[in-house]
Amino acid sequence: MCHSLSPPRGRTFRSLVILLLLTVLLGVARAAEPAKAPVWDAAAARHLLSRAAFGGTPEEAARLAALPLERAVDLLLEEAAAAKPPARPEWVRDVWINGGRRWSDMSAEEYLIVFRRHNARNAQEIADLRAWWLQQMITTQTPLRENMTLFWHGHFTSATGKVNGFSQAFYQQNETYRRHALGNFRRFLEAVTLDPAMMAYLDLERSSKAHPNENYARELLELFTLGVGNYTEKDIQEIARAFTGWTLDAPPGSVKVNRPTAPDRLQFPSITRDGMVPTFVPEQHDNGEKTVLGRTGRFGIQEVLDLIVQQPACGRHLAGRLIDYFGASDPEGRLRERMAQAFRESKYEVRPMLHVLFTAPEFYAPAARGSKVKGPVRLLVGACRDLRLEGEATPSLAQLTVPLGQELFNPPTVKGWPSGTAWISASTLPLRYRLGEALVEGKAPAEPQPLGRLRLMAVSRDAAQAAATIKRLQAIDRERKEQQAQGGLKVHFNVARLFPKGPPQDPEELADALLTRLVVTKVRPTTREAIVTACRTVSPAERPALAARLILASPEYQME
Image (cartoon, rainbow, N blue to C red; front, side, top):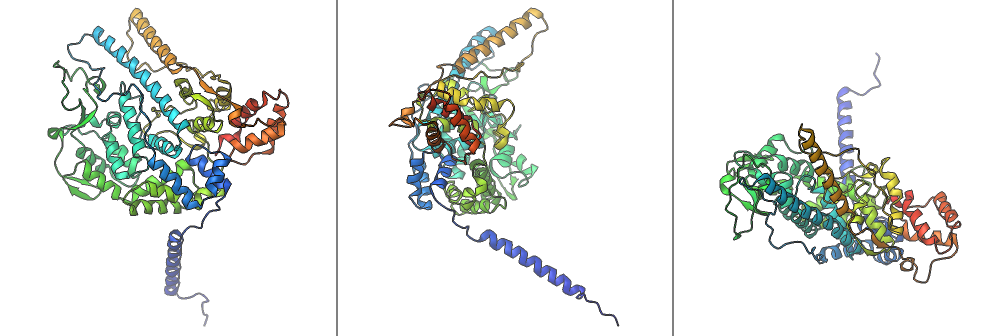
């Protein structure tokens, strides 16, 4: 009789099942096992400061490296959480009333005067707000908090390109993001939901029982909290119903002008809202039962936000966004799971997640270092801090990041800005190379000029009227450019701030000293040689500025 060398099928199946179970259990065990501690030295401290604090000097890195890693990270987080808010811009008002209000009995000529005056003031305030925030990022003693404010600015997006005449709301939003930057995410989420700029940007201020608007509900789930695949279309519809009844109104007790408004003619909230105070109107709220994420009840904002943060996907989604922003290497998702666990165990606090991130071996892994392209704002702020530039931020300085692809308070889409190599293109790369010229020599590079512009309005078929409209739009464009260029570049490079005893005279020593001070990543020999060679062609007095310019243009400085 012929005997098979193979085991019986039943035994084979049982063996495969056991093998599969062991594989799964091994994977769970590996995911749960504590991560090995990273090597903590001065180089690791430079890496941490570069990613978390817009950069740091070798001396600052050495002081940080002298502490145990856990204590060093705790110190950064404690300082960021305890920092006092910056003084607000002078134009910010205690009570904001809409100066661009339009009434149905207002003639077109009368409103044109109001519109142009209001928009001109708003444009000036937005330009000043960008410079004001840039100044905070450059000069703050707690850069981690400003960096986190920038992170939230790209996470919970609102854009001046859509929300017109609302400069005060964008300042208030920036203040809110800074206040909650390292705090409780559940409380932060409620502040974001009822933030005036957000309510205007994602149309929550006009969402009513009769016409629930789904824009904010959709982005809340898809981009802000859970991520695609962790909710249904029905959840969006039900949350939109739960969020109805909220609008923006004048402050309580303020006197409203008794003039008629015609909703059928005036459809834009920017010209019909009276103020920017979130106000609940019960008769506009849908108080019926809703089913959200598997739970049913007469939900409003509070109940819905509670349900969202309780979802395991919320901590994972937020952890993934932080990992992407700060640039850890987490191909297997173990760091994300540990951060999500810290989020749940702390009852939705952000700070413990950052502690896990900044002490993780994945954050200090070789694959995570020198692998991230600096975003335009981080590049500009880091350069100003690294060079210890004197002077102040102006709208012209803030404008330098716009052609690079990042305009503060105006992200391109609700998804925010891109990241990584998406920052590099045929148009942005030459401008990045010339950033050092602007900062060191005070010469703003010429921006590429668009072939045309969006009119956002119809043009009359009458040739004379069409020409008048185009002329008016061109005048508006000129005014905007003048506002953006206001003040010029008022930052100055003073080599004595980097070398109080004077810079090295030898080109090689100068190049090495500046590369050590400015560059966190590994420097290629060809980069060093190019800087040394260039320095030999100019006088000793010109060498520091030239070397600084070339370093800022190098691939090594553009990465972190």
